[in-house]
Length: 163
Image (cartoon, rainbow, N blue to C red; front, side, top):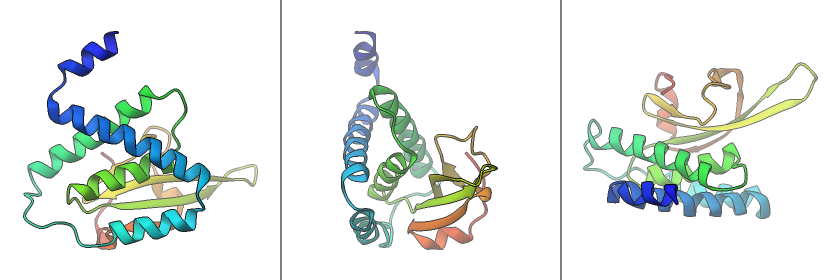
């Protein structure tokens, strides 16, 4: 009951972003587990490689939007009883950012471990920041060899800085 009370106290914009994050996380979780990745890749490339919308003040609105998207995704991940994969969270985050006209890139990569296995991880880069749920664990994403890049590819030349 306490969570519901907290939800109703939050501003309307945050409620809408939270609901959007929940829906996109459910859809991306189902898609990652049931649909071949080539279909997900084709959809995301068609939707997310186009130019971002113009007319958005990149300094004020986009910073607030990015913070709210990240906060909404974090809240939505904590609501569900299952563990959300970093790929599902990154797909949902990429779609949410692109819907707001914020250029973003989804990166997925692997790095070798000591026992000769591979560790896979996905994260989002935008401008001068990174959305990554596991910032503490994977604070150095440069250790990953990037295999998949989806989104506005001009961002790959921007400097890296973890948010």
